[in-house]
Image (tube, rainbow, N blue to C red):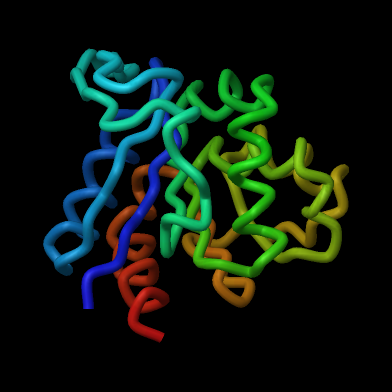
Length: 170
């Protein structure tokens, strides 16, 4: 059964942390929608790859999607200053819907106030921040807390991609 996956993203995303999970999700038969500030926005990754958003944040509602992916790089730090993106993430954390984040992705969780007691990982410099926000932090390739799946770096992508597809089938 096809699932609809939202991806919150803007410039300076870590290219492979967007392209690799997106490819794994699509290969599994899912529909992936890139959401940024505006529809058809050109997004430039940290490594220079170009992506185009499908929708603007004002055109979508979180309940229209079965899961949410947040790739890393500097994209999450930019998005977390915008309450519309924070509200989108809050929905998935609050409802315990499938939520996948890698590297700097969990930075977006901090603004939600819903990290306390959740077990997760993130990039080395982000782990203390989510810990200060009340999360139980682990230094492991993939950490699963119910339907919340987090990973640390691009090196973890094979395990991360496998786990996010598994969670969608659970």
